[in-house]
Length: 141
View 1 (tube, rainbow, N blue to C red):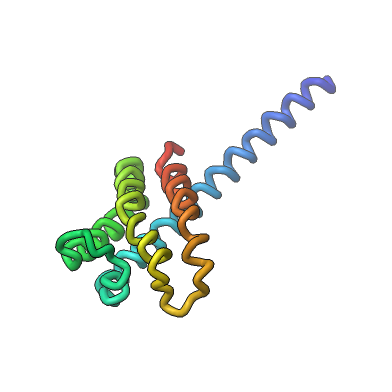
View 2 (cartoon, helix red, strand yellow; view 1 turned 120 degrees about the vertical axis):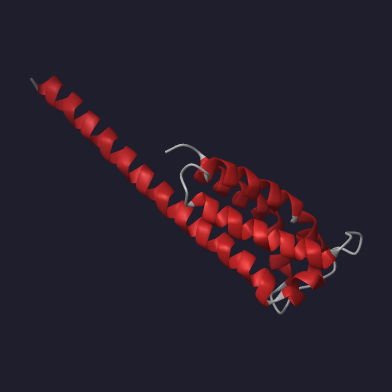
């Protein structure tokens, strides 16, 4: 009888852990969606900031700024739609890779907008954290 209770408790604990994990993933996905929609909206509210960090070698900077803003908004909204979530995460991962040169340009050329210069360099490895976060959010529930 004691073994049966133990197994029952183990199954109950597994169930609680699955529910907690699903709730955590849903919350992380909501935060990611809000983050990307806000970041995309900022491309249109303050394009000057993005023009400043755009590497000189990229053509059509205003078009690229607007395109990345639209992609961030679409990706953020897509994370909230279960049918689109996986594809939205892939798109956001591609976007995070595509904008990495602007982040490097920001650090190399000390375009800091008043924040400590060291944060610009610490931001670079965080791009991988963002990629992993978006990847995890896009995985099946």
